[in-house]
Each structure stands twice: as C-alpha cells, then as structure tokens.
Image (cartoon, rainbow, N blue to C red; front, side, top):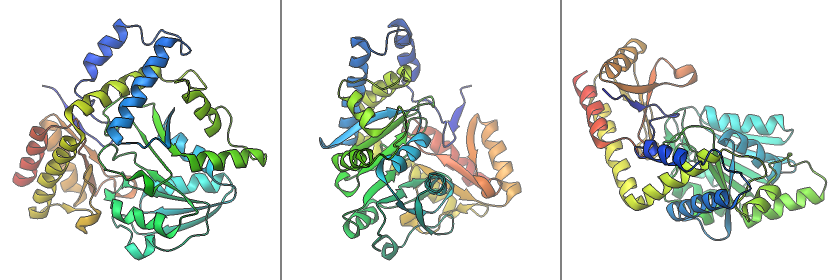
Length: 359
C-alpha cells in the first residue's frame, strides 16, 4: 500500500513527478551542459511557468539558489548595510533573525509567543531599519500572517525593503507583490519536489540597493550575489552548475499546476484545511494549536494535545500508511503538524479527519 507523507517538508512528491523524472532521464537532463541552449530552454520554461502561476509582475526578477536557507543569508548580505528588523513568531522566523545577527547587522526583533500572530497595530508600527523581514507561514507553529496585515508593513514603511518568507505557503497565497520587495521559497513543501532548490524573487528596488552596497565596497557574498544572479538570469543561466534536475522538475510541476488552475488549488487547499480544523475543534483529545482563526495556516495545520495522545495518533496514522509530522522544537511531543499541500488529495485528508473523529 502506498504511503502518504503529510510531513511539512520534505513532503509527498507531487503526483506527476515520477513521470517527469522518467522523461528527464530519457532526455539526458542530468547530463547536458549547464551552459547549453538545451538548459537555457529549461530555465526559461521554469521561469515563465512560475511567473504565470504566481502572477509575478514584470518589475520582479526570479533566480535559483540551493535553498531558502541560503536566501536568508543572501537577503541580509545584499539588501542591508547596517540594520534589519525581524517579526518573529516561531523557529524559522527566529533563524532568519539569527542570520542577521551572525552577519553583524544592528538587528531589532519583535517577538510574540509561538502559535500566536501579530496584532495589526504591531505591523503598522514604523521602523528605521533598511530591511524588514517577516514570514507569511511559520512552518514550525502553523501561524499564518494574513496578506492584508502584511500590506500594513509596506504602508507604514515605504522606504524600507520588505522581505517575505513563503517557504511553506507558495503558491497558495494570492500575494500582491506591490506590498513587498522580495519573496522566496523552497520546493520540498507545497511544490512537492525533492529538496535542494530555492527560488528568490526580487524587484528593481532590491537591485538598486545591492548595486549601491557594491559601490560602497560592501561584501555581498561570493558567487551568489544578487547582481551576479541577475546578470546570469537574463541569459537563463546560473553563476554555478546548479541543480539542473530540480529546475527542470519545478518547471514541469509549475506547468501542471497552471493547467490545473491556481484558483482550483487554492479552493481545494481551503476545503482540506476546513476538514481538519473542524475535527480538531470538535475533538475531546486535540485542539488547534493556533487558537485565533485568522492566524491559522491553511497549508500546515498544527494540532496540540497530551504527549501520549499525540504519540498514539501518529502511530495510528502510520498504521494506515499516513505519515504525519511531529511538532517542532520544544513542542515536538505535544503537537503534530499536518501538511496540506497541493499534492495531498481530498481523500487522504478525509481519512485523517475520520481518524481524528474516531480517536
């Protein structure tokens, strides 16, 4: 019996990936030169499909890195000279802050308890920082920051660059790119692909900032500086020999999602999340870890309960060939994280909801 991986990343492969892998091997994608016309065509196809899927404006650019973790570092290096401001509500937004500290920036942090979101008045506070970093969907806690709230950050801080972590939500949110300057994600979550590829999206303001820092002799990194990445992307190339298979598969899956329709994907995501949250609210054993509904993630549903009950339920799911994610960090034993990505079917989500109901 096939296993279903509802882990929040790496997660279950998108259902078309096995066929695309076979085609990639037949077409020698892993063997061609990364400076060849054949590979340029692959990069162009992937870029165009992502632009369509995410509705990326023409004044935004798209490049590939090794991971979203790398992008944390590149954003701090390339988009700030001295100061960053971080809105932290979980482990991954905290790690973004840690990178800025390690890189010697003057960092300001606003921290709320895990499983809580930011009140609108906090997001509307002005900041003197060059760079403001926030997370749309905190993978560790299942907290989602509403897009309308993110718009407050831009409205209050028009001079600052705004960076948005979309690692465990893209392509689900209908993001208005005018409200941010740069966004990024990796492919092993909602895109249902093997890990090892990050996607960095940035606008012309980011380019201007990086070029200014470069003129001032600030070190932006080495091979993956923003100007270098941009220069190569204009030729549909990368500075280094990249994860060619990953870029190829991402383009194919993005094309599949475009054919399926982003509105359909969003509606199905909302439907599946509603199934799970309804059962958690009725359960006498578990409860939604995020109590305020407007902050609940639609792509990573987190349940809280007693450690022994969590352990028993995870084992029950596994007996049905469903692998659910444990909690993260200090909540490892008292929470569980159920990924709700485009590759996860309504049927498997209904099965998890049934198990919750009868547990």
